[in-house]
Length: 366
Image (cartoon, rainbow, N blue to C red):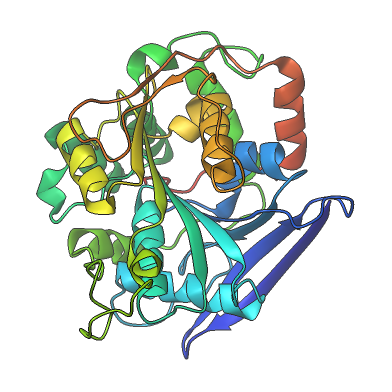
């Protein structure tokens, strides 16, 4: 397995740090996956997914502008600005020119992936988006579409004045309270709440806290966000009728919307609207007992769902994988996944060993 960590100038102002993880050399033509973290999170938040997919997939992890060693350009930022940053990185590493890409984003990162997908269906058609996965994310036309309880808990996180208040607010927003009180999933002492803190300390060691100005700009990008419209099935990006056979290239790719049943921010109405927006090749999967950070809370189930999603264009996926799904494009009923048992001790050791530890926590919201 090969790791490359580099920075690239994205456009005229923002230097973006990214990391490439390549599988062993005997893996030929590995699927390429781009992971985008949520607001206020470093790319290391995906460590459970890195450990699972690094032996079989080529992985790209990007630190959004204002996070870690990525630059913090002047002026206000939009979700689209973040999408252009990622697009520039993809072209810089030559992951374009026809190579199929799978985009995975959590919450705010999901919005970035959605905007990147729209770019690649319109003005950046040299980038081939094979699939889109939105984790704990709904593409809404207004922040008012989010659950009121989640907005209140987000506000509590934003105004937290000390580390303890910050941790308490982050845990309350991202994980169900009943789950936090259970025995630690990592096999360590205490409860799941303590295990999550240990996980955060591990992945953030040696990394700078997110500056307040960067935090404010990313929050403003969410509040002001209006989703870009996809081109119609028979209309190109320039408003001219698409040539015969080009409709599939303009339509949304296969899309997975994956969310915890107890997500504090996203309810069924906004999730169903997102599935409808993404069209007939979209699918909604709900994880029972999971909260907003379902990919940390239930990594095995999330990884299983992502692996099935990535493989759909290579072979017909098996439906005997523990998930009950909607019919493609359905927006009426939601899918259920069985609650996940705590990960095995061996799995946890592997994850901990691949992380970078920390003695401080930064704000980790979306």
